[in-house]
Image (cartoon, rainbow, N blue to C red; front, top):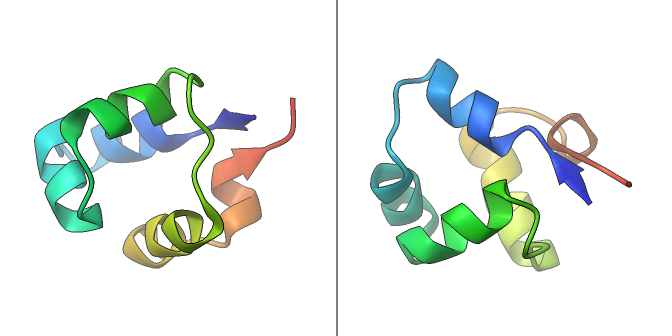
Length: 63
C-alpha cells in the first residue's frame, strides 16, 4: 500500500517521534509505515486520518 504519510508529516514539520507520540505507536512503527514495510491496522488508519484531518483514501492508496 502506498501512502503520503512522510509528506504530510514533513509539511507540518513533525518528527517521526512526534507523530509516533500522537498516534501512540513507536517511532519504528512510523518509519515502517512511511517506507511501506507495514500497513496500518484499521483503527490506526482512522487515527492517522483524524490527526491529519483527511479521509483515509487521501492518505493511503492501493499499490
